[in-house]
Image (cartoon, rainbow, N blue to C red; front, side, top):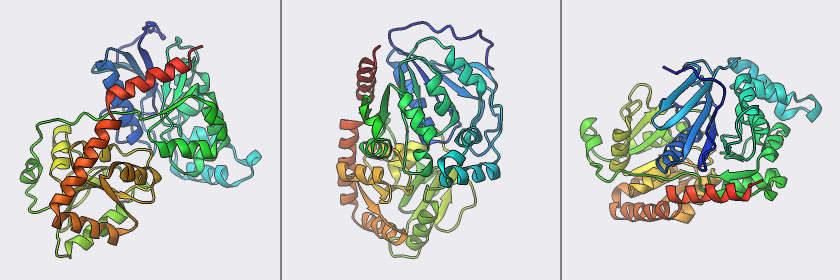
Length: 401
């Protein structure tokens, strides 16, 4: 139960960080939010004083209240939750988005769009405007706490955009927020290039690439998941959200093709994608605990990341850290870049190509192992927590006022 606490009285610790996200918690399914939670815990383990400022919402579709306003703890991390003043109405937001993306700029109503986008929490914005001058990190760029909290917060302000190519990235309210940042911290080289192309002025800001690290457990039984769920034969694994741009339809079509081929395989889905009814070719296992999720990754022939709009795939990094190959959507510049740099995966354009690639890896386990080993080396060289901490320190030094 959150405790009551007076207004911000944070200590001015040499290694202190405030992280602002629209929603936060173990139950939150979202790549950007998950990345920030991992960062908070990783820095806390390195003796940083980390607070997370967020809202009471959990559901991005409506921003319904799921947590109690106030202060609570997530292990070593102090979490401050502020109430959401307005729930999102999907039909209204869709119409405001059409206006914001297509009307002439004076008629777009971008401020109204950002409020409807939510989660609208005036208390959070007000608290940021009065907060102690602790370095403040915002992510992702898209939501109201970042768009209006970033200009209100004390310096230094660091933005982790978690951007992908979408109409919202081109809005003036987004440009204003980005230029309010003192530094930009990107998940990938491709994300950095995208933001610089759309908002060239951001190129003058200090920046770095590589926000997260991956800590893979070392004693995972690669056969445990299949035994527990009575899966006979090879399987592909995907765990994550089912929102637009996540490519679930392509993945399911590929699973159906594999089921009728000589290289029959089961498609295992977890997380939001894992809610629902099984079919002969698809095993839906719901939300997995952390240990079981690692077991599912370790035992898979390959991990599939079917989304076309990605700023980073934590799932791909986790797969490579376990030495498993990845099959990645070629429409995502970020995923294609990871595949090219790592040698740990192939990219696909459609369901038939995805099915053919999976069948080849099933028939050629030595090649799958070699790809997984290349991916493991890539993650070890690029996505470590000590490197992420070093990048953060460098950004803070560059923004010293």
